[in-house]
Length: 110
Figure 1 (tube, helix red, strand yellow):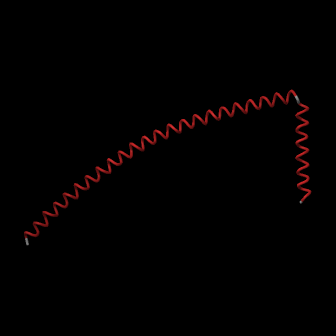
Figure 2: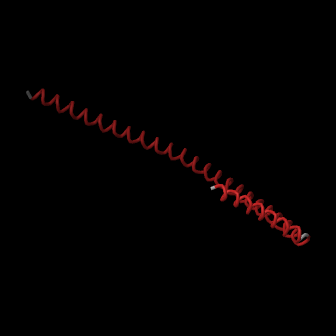
Figure 3: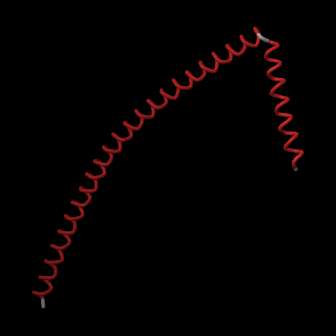
């Protein structure tokens, strides 16, 4: 009986030792995977930040170009209105009359 208990104790100790080694190996593997994922995530984060900065710079450039175009259009329109005030008033009156006629027809059909 003592031999069986001794054998069980030896096997139990070996099993505990093997389990501890296995747990240590799994922990080391998880740490390596986490470090590798951290490196890849860090690289991805750096690349994403770089792309975000490039996109922000492009959007700023487009915003500035749009602002310049609108400014040029406003200056051109202002110059035209100052040079041809009566033509502008006539054009606005014609557009207003056409809009009024369309609205009157639409209301009259109901």
